[in-house]
Image: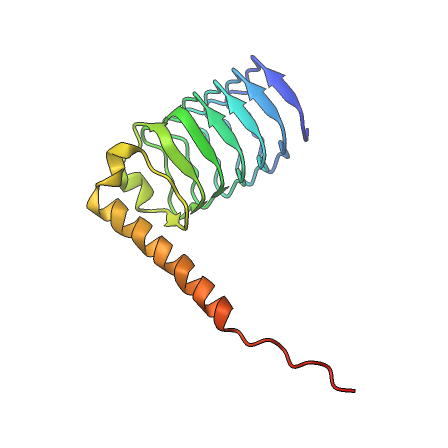
Length: 167
């Protein structure tokens, strides 16, 4: 199903475990209570989709865009959300336990709480809604992520070059 286009489809409750929806476009598609564990959704575009109580455990949504979706109660436990963008998505009760966030953009997400973010693996360049920027625990996690990036860059700069080949 890679690079498919679905519009107004009803996949509520479907078992789509390990499905490959890479580079797919889903528009106004219902995935309520669908099982998308281990799904490949990188570079996917999900616009106006309903993922209420969907399971996306260990799914890969890297570089995906979720626009104006209902994600209430969706489970992204241990999912890969690198460079994923949540635009105007409703995120009440979304589980992000141990999800890998790197460059993830929640800045336009609705109803995202600090508690949801604090159980994730936050890495560099993760953007949060303005309402959470001043939340001390979130600010501290973002600061730690930035320090880790700086330390890795410093270590790379200190690695000596290999010696030149001798004749």
